[in-house]
Image (cartoon, rainbow, N blue to C red; front, top):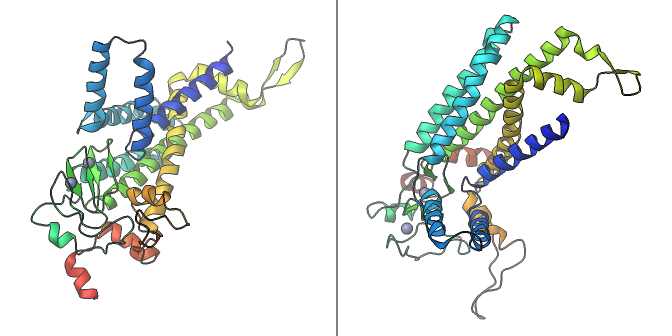
Amino acid sequence: MDFLTLFLLYLCSVLAVAALLCLCSGRQESFLARSVARASQVLSLVIPSQLQRVAQRALHRLFHTRSCLFVVLHVALQAAVFGEYTWEVFVYCWELQFPLLLLLLPYLLLAANLGCFLLCSRADPGTVTKSNAASLAKVYAYDGVLFQRGLVCPTCTLEKPARSKHCSVCRTCVHRFDHHCVWVNNCIGAGNAGAFLLYLLSLTATAGAVAAVTAALLIHVLLLSNAVHGTYLDAQGQEQPVGIPLLVQHLFLTFPRIVFMLGFVILLTLILGGYCSFSLYLALTNQTTNEWCKSRRFGSSPHLPSQPHDRPLVYKNIYSKGIWRNLKEIFNPPTVLERKKKT
Ligand SMILES: [Zn+2]
Ligand SMILES: [Zn+2]
């Protein structure tokens, strides 16, 4: 197997792992549940039943209870990337007299990201309790399609405020429920939606800054060594100019850890960038992930009612108040008092 095939296999495996980890973040709970169910069906044919029970318990603990495992993985990945950045990239860049502010930018973004992470994981996402259920029910109107007035959560035995949902992991109803994020080990709701958006933006910017500085270093090294203008002799003894695959191979053999880390952070930047764009779209249109997923079922055509006398249900986002007010609401969620003031 030649170098490029190995490198492509590496890229594909990193991409697959990164995509899987993103899907596990809770946005695609149904996809995850289906995948786990299918995987266990296949595995049940070859794995002894005792081992299956242990695996089922482990999976249940991982995805259906609050677990620090993903937080540990999150910190470990950041430590590995920043360890490599500090140990090699920063030192080489410093020797090549890169501007200090550029080299410090990833650390500044990391500090901002850790701050947002703490805010997001420590904040109360908007737990619905006996004392606040009645007041939260007055914050948002019931749209009559996704949220019906008078529904009681069977677990919490409290009336569900509009836009709330029961989280089976946190075992509580959450006001303006977005999703349960395993990476911050907390629900994302009215109380921490703004911190979560900033957390996502700072994480994407951190990965992007590390990728940009590392790529700049490798390009600088190639230009300094004059390898870009080099030639090699092919199998027929003909002199050929060095192409991009050979340059990548040269860099991989010279700086294996740096190139490996660069591949990882580039993929991470692309995946996080897509995820960030989606979250921004939701924030600007005043939708939660939960509402977006549920609204897909209705589409643009009327949904047939369960009773023949009922009117067909048509979904319309009644919570949007324009881009800027929607964005403001993410960081400053409305309270009952504010709503009273407006009416
Ligand atoms: Zn509940
Ligand atoms: Zn939760």
